[in-house]
Image (cartoon, rainbow, N blue to C red; front, side):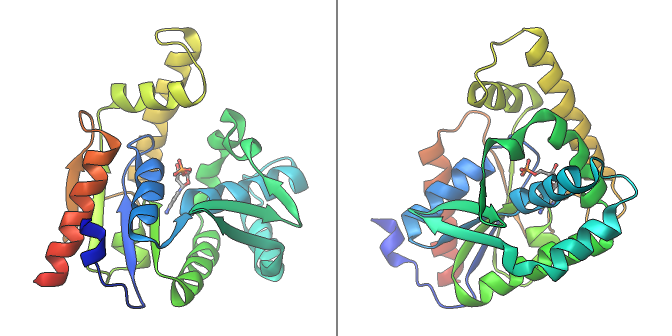
Length: 235
Ligand code: DC
């Protein structure tokens, strides 16, 4: 088993960045499982901030400072729990599940994602976790901004069509239906807002390994990442 050759000493952060639907969360979970470390889905923390805004103010735009303040003063209300390498998020003892992934919520994330105080508080939370656990983290700016010094940085990509097919399969949406094209538009718009926002835009870190996952199986990608981590530890 190649993962046995990986030595894990804190800090140990594997950064997996890339656009929506590139397979990051599936790969991150499988990789974390394979090398026996925790998994953090940073997107779900941005989703939680958006959820807090929608449930408190029914809107996000214009409320970003207040959302960051609520999050900051109630950091203990956010609990991230790892069960079998799966991440569960609780806010005020409520397990947040599918509500974090609705299209309506997803369309509003851009407001918190482009707000410095919101990003700072998410980064603070993630960096704190990484002091305690070895982790695989997926997101947009993990290798470029949050952990610029980690040697293990990967940028996972796939074509827009393939990414839409993957997200549609997760949501039981049939291909080439109106819902499918809505999803495709939403992903394309998110690519644009993630890549062009003024703070921490989605981009490949200079020293990240690029992997196009369009025609690779989950296991192929995971094994390729494991091999790359082992190689970096030998270098
Ligand atoms: O990974 P995801 O699709 O659940 O992420 C949702 C949104 O959160 C994404 O469109 C942009 C934002 N995000 C971010 O700005 N930075 C991260 N590290 C992770 C997510």
